[in-house]
Length: 204
Length: 428
Image (cartoon, rainbow over all chains, first blue to last red; front, side, top):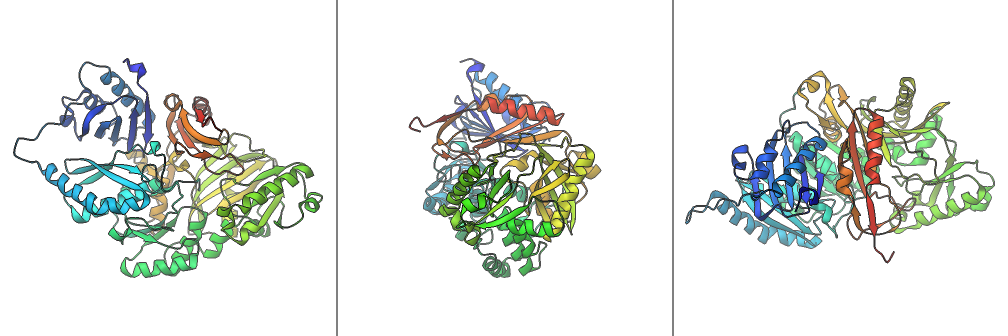
């Protein structure tokens, strides 16, 4: 595989966040979230993205074929995004894995994230998913890292015009109430691939 | 101006389930730290889990929705209300009136929504508008064809995104256009709006360049946020929009005339607060108001606009979205002097190439790689049936660009569009 074989589609969410859908798997070992340059050490892709000049990258989330980048600078996505694309291509073509495996917790000592994962998973199983199932939707808990919950929306939720309402006004509010230690929720869904959204948008 | 601290006041955001505006408004409220309640016409599946943040209102009946909002506000006091489209602008006005919040009079929002009422008020106030006539769908089009002026345009009263708008240059074309619009108005989703779907507006076709104005009314004063050029000639027979580019390349005096025309129109309709989106034409006789809506620009187009708040904003490079400005205003927060962020920006509403079931859009990455292109957002999903204008009103996606000049932005948008390839179901 050469860098030119890799196709990348950018999906900016707003001026601060952009998802990059990559034609090749970037990280097959679940989700990894990097919230600082220090955390990126050992993962060439994350190191390269944090090093993009003028981007002021704050967070990177990698899962499967999806790379989500959060930046704090006002630099437009064409500039930053093209540098992100370059980083993805060059690190995927490199000898080392673009993203290192998540460090395993010490044996016999579950981390705070592990404990949170169990509680969030229970909330999703008991409350969230039975509710969204009424619209043919499903919300998958992908991981909890540094008390940030990563979810993927599927079925009627994927590509739904109201997915952001479900996420922010529903799921996030429920987490705030039932698992207040959670610091945030990140949606890593590729909404452009949704083929049966419950609500589809029209222009005005 | 530094970004304000989190705002604990509660905003009621009226989001119809078919809107494109969800993410832009929800994320704007989050950035401002505003307590948010989202109201839709259908219940969220999670409403019971967050009764302060999700509510169902009868958005088809503004007075009923206002009473529902009043009951809701007993438990969760509201500091502001925002509608995002033509219909919810009327509902927002009704709620604002019932709860004493900042907003427009219901009559003004209704006048902006109804194309005939709007034309009537504007003509009475001597705002330049096309000559127009209102006709019932059951009238004999053959008789009408003999007496309407040509070229003319037939329009529905309520539909947006130029759905159902058709130009006719001859009696034969008029007959075909009238029949076609009659069929569109009979579609179940359109007929549901009742009496307005039983009428057709016939008006002069106004030649000239077309422009859109985005503005914010603050206590009756218009603040112009952006004037867009629409460089693709909108000559008909259908009026699917494509490219918007700002700043406008109109001469200064012509741009001022466009702004004056929009401000006079807003005043004539009685609008005093909140966003307006006006569509105008400009020719040798000056600016003509084609339509004015009491809402922000539609679709995902607002993403093309970023603003700085006065000199302080420029110094810190702090940028505001259109939705953040609208929310701040609705909550009664003084809006500082605003300047559009430097550089030219533009958006292309990607045209529907033909009718059919969409299987794939190729070339997205290549389109995005075009210099100056910010983003290519595909909103159509695989398996969706694409419907061209005039029956359709849903764009398959949007392309955004920004650059040093409007010309450069326009060229980038066109170049990116050329790289997209639509793949349809072979059975179509």
